[in-house]
Image (cartoon, rainbow, N blue to C red; front, side):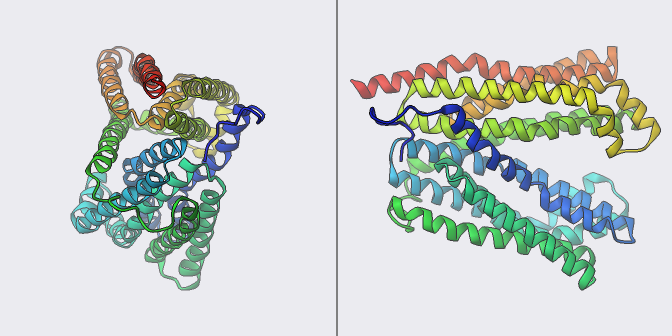
Length: 453
């Protein structure tokens, strides 16, 4: 399978290729928080407020957990796309089985640590005893969906890496339809309460993953069949490469979580109203990230294929177009947030103090897409190239810059200094990777020259 046309074929329209990938990716990205949102919405119509709070906290814990292990999808996309670009059918199959095996190992560890991990997570929230009690009831059931959720990341990454975009959308639609239907049946039909929403999500996650396995089995046939290639799981060189990429992406993701958690904690020291306003305004970045991430993820796929073929020309073209589209989306988002930010905040809260505080810092949130876009897109480029050490090192440098900035700016400028530090962090992410980008291009060109010789 190759995206490079023969001499007699018409040239590839890379704009069209890039845009064709982004739509399904947006749907897939939206699916990650959706089960938790559905669970929260259903419990929001129950008489006990503690149930709503418990599911909200539980959904946040699992969303954070799965985001932390997002390297299962990211590394699988890059490695699969490179194998596909190189026409290596054996490695296409091997990447799938290695990613799936790693997902199951991580899931087994989560299940073994189920009790202490859940209690630690809810203990950190400092929630009321009744909320913790209900939250643990939700957690103890929902955790049994972790193997399916993590395995599904590897499946989605493999399908995306091959450019099979319809199947992931079907998987997410089926999973979420089952989740919604069972939530209503278990809660409003059987009156199972919080245990019902947790069970519905677990069943939906396993249903979607089993469907994904069926789809993958069919997609494997052109690449040599469904059986793992000999030595796929015992080839130490291949496993070491996978583990190295995943280790670096995990460190990068952990630093990202720490930075945004610290932003919220630092906001709390400035007052409850300021914290609430900051959290509401951060949803601007959450909303725009679905579009920005889509172009970053599309770049992962096309860059991976270009690296697999050692095609530096296509690589540079994809990188340029992904950035152009990313900056266009960021600009549109910033204009819309600045023009309609007050309405968005009003949908999220009706508390006068929070509304007034959010209005003071609206401009800082509205321009978030503009300062974040470079980091989003170039991050996808390095993921697709599986040059993970650069991602790790760049993020470590960026978070160091962030902590230094907030240490200097917050005492002097308060919440404005905190927002400025966040913007500096986002820009630093892009700059630290941008500095390393020429080395990535030189490496790709050197690999092609080596093959030519």
